[in-house]
Image 1 (tube, rainbow, N blue to C red):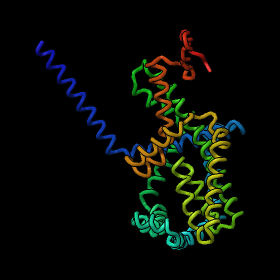
Image 2 (image 1 turned 135 degrees about the horizontal axis):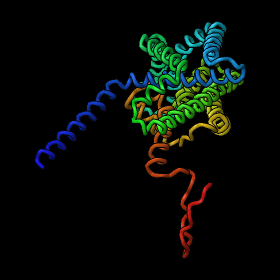
Image 3 (image 1 turned 180 degrees about the vertical axis):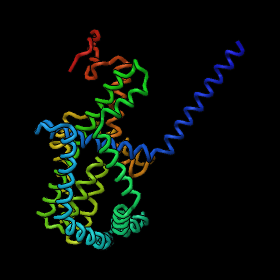
Image 4 (image 1 turned 90 degrees about the vertical axis):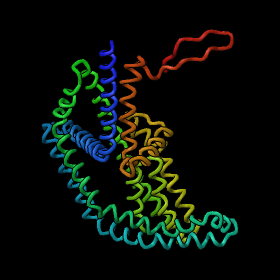
Amino acid sequence: MERSFSQRVLIASALIALAFLLFFTLWTAVDVFLVIFAALLAAVFLRGLSDAIQRWTGFRESWSLFSTIVLLLATIGGIIWLLAPQIADQADQLSTQLPQATQSLLNRLEQHKWSRQLLSQAPDLSSVLSRYGGIFARITKALSASLGVLANLFVIVVIGIFAAAQPKLYRTGLLRLMPFAWRPRAEQVLHSIGEALRHWLLGQLFCMSMVALLTGFGLWILGIPLGLVLALIAGLLDFIPTVGPFIAAIPGVLLAFLQTPEKALLVAATYTAVQMIENYLLQPFAQRRAVNLPPALMLFSQLLLGVSLGLFGLVLATPLTVTAIVVIKMLYVEDVLGDKDHRSVQTAAPPGGTVRSPTRT
């Protein structure tokens, strides 16, 4: 009995040590896993377009993927050839005009008693606003010139292409690491994750494009300069729901202050209107087949991953949450709790009555 107890203690200690070692490995290599997850997102995107081309043209799987890559490269190359000089010129003007806009805002705030009191009670606000334009420009230039970012993008693209070319090979290899009895259910989970990410990603890209177009059109009507680069920023940052659109609106509103405060209010209203159109019209249409993400959960995941993992974690917070929801729904809610119909609700008992059976909606 003493030897049996000692063996159990040793086994438990070994399992705890293994768990800590696994957690430490995952935490220290979290950037690598984020890059791999981003590459899988790229593979899901390429595979989705490739399957669509295969259905439309009847090409073989390999030729469909090759056609997808060629079309994407041609599209990106055409956009760069047509718009790159204009975007570069407007980005340079943006980096020089943002400090002027922030200084103009500070000067206008100094003209009012309530704003002077606000600035006096929060002295750091003045320094933050006065340095915002320079910080924004430095961040933009650092991201565009960073060799680390370029290396990560290269790795993401390469792994994404390989994974999209032979998805069954990698899926089969992953399934072989699991016990034989778990493989059918694991394959269902992987398929559901892939479908959810594909629908979310395609819908998100559609919404990003529409946000860029609507923002650019609105800024053009209002006569705001640098509308092309501001629309591009709005479209790209729309990949980060909730937080991204708010950040994207700041440069446009600040530049509008160089003209009049009323124009700044109109620009803010334009960004707000675009987000309302996206939230109430575009998103329900584009994401009707993807996982329904509660806004509070999405914001919590962005804050959690943004604080713990930095910018990369913030960018990938939503697709990671989509993946987590699918896994929890299938492996815990369905398999552990036995709830096969998540839409079933428990009806409250009426006064003096009995509890009715769950109704399906």
